[in-house]
Image 1 (cartoon, rainbow, N blue to C red):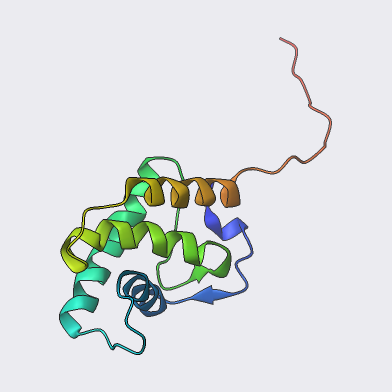
Image 2: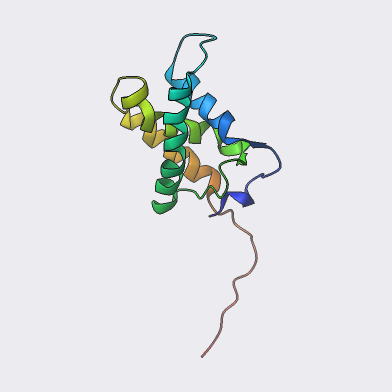
Length: 121
């Protein structure tokens, strides 16, 4: 399911996403990310979104217009992809799976309650 269908009126940019990923990986308050850290994160955003799409979890059509509804779980998923390089720790697979589950819940198809139409051959 394309995420454009899910509350696309409030969006965050790719920079907002990178800063949220950084804040999830670094616990120090007020620490400003270096250019290298931001580059590392932004380089992982596209492939991470493509992976989620390939797994039929969610499709993020524009990383510069991320709907608010998926912003935090998407950032959490990307943070786990960046953790080995940026936080010097292995990926937390449980946290990654929780983020995937949240993204699936947000993007699932809702019932329309319309009667099913059939075609007879």
